[in-house]
Length: 236
Image (tube, rainbow, N blue to C red):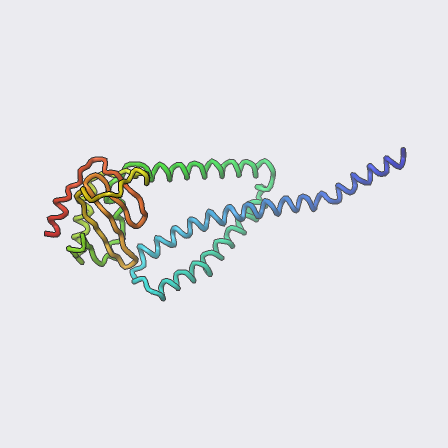
């Protein structure tokens, strides 16, 4: 009986001795989880801001040198900096008590709710009605030329502003890909391309619908028809 009691006590002591290591492993797992979460969130935000800076506020022409410079700065400066901030924030929050089971679970629930809300908002925004001019958004400082049906070309940014103002009166709503009929041979339409220092924006515009060549999205014109004749008058 005494031998059995000693064995039980020995097992309890062994478990107690392993307890700090188990706690350390759990803490490390939580730290890694927080690091991954913060790294992904910060990287998405930083990449978005980095893209805005490059495409809208740096008035240079895109060439091999600038492209390489942008990629090098992104992978060797922005990504490591993002990882550093995510690591420090993870350690700080664990130190402040987020490592406790209750607060950690609350954090996960909040994270799931926030992600669900953002995803829902993105879907609603993509499928909601908006002005046609909104998908022609670009930095006018980087404008180079406007081409309509290959027959008309203008290097005057005021011509583009006039065109966007005209198209802005029409409302569009995103279509599903299977709703788009690729046969446009019997429809009046034009093709518009706006060239900038950082790329181009292309649209195929018809009376009742249009296609955005850059994104591959299709749109239905809710207050159709678009006055195609007015656009063709520009060419004439």
